[in-house]
Image (tube, rainbow, N blue to C red; front, side, top):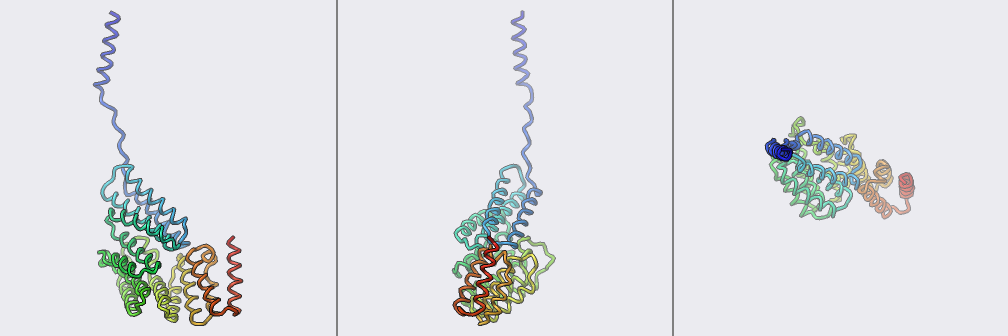
Length: 334
């Protein structure tokens, strides 16, 4: 009797276990636009760091890490197609910032690797604004690598995107960068025409229209003049370059610390090439000391300025003043 009772109890327990409904599976995490918004805020922080410092490996590495965060989020839960596209766009934006930091620091091998990653991810986002940024950066990269043919082709991809036809501000940026590319190829006439068209397009742009932060944070008349300064330096038109340099500085927004350093350095070079060593040295000494000591691109540009100063006025008082100044800046940065 006792044995039969035990068997009956055991069978009942098994039947009860089999017949019980399974515990509800944990619902997968839902990825939403709030997650995208947090990534976009981090992207805004990267943009701000670039405008303050630019070209540093720290910015490049941080942007790469954040791109990885955006891609990992794709695998961590369910999401709508809109959210997934936005995550890909965010990842591509971070990769494009890593690419730009490498370009600015003249680490072109790294920049090309970032370009490939950014292009692949951007193609899955369907976001033409970030695709424009990537191809436009590619054009700038090739221009700095002295490959104007490739620069022309890459920038043309950006300019042929639909967003360039819909929004005059994108069209303006594409034209301004093409002006610099024409100058690198030695085409003076096309350079002037492109910058004129860039200004006209910017004048047509609706300033109140919604645009990505990477564009609104830097693109304005000052940027057009800054690119024109670079272009006319390439063409050896020192007087026109100097004019654009002053106009750029007059309109430059306060947060554009990196651009201030680069523009001031280029302006000094334009003055030096006109035989005005004293004024050129005075201008070069206005480059913010932090950039002069730590920004890779500015350091190289100032080294070129010093070499040219030494070549043209090796025994002048201005050369001695400049060497003393750079020694003090270098010492203070240690």
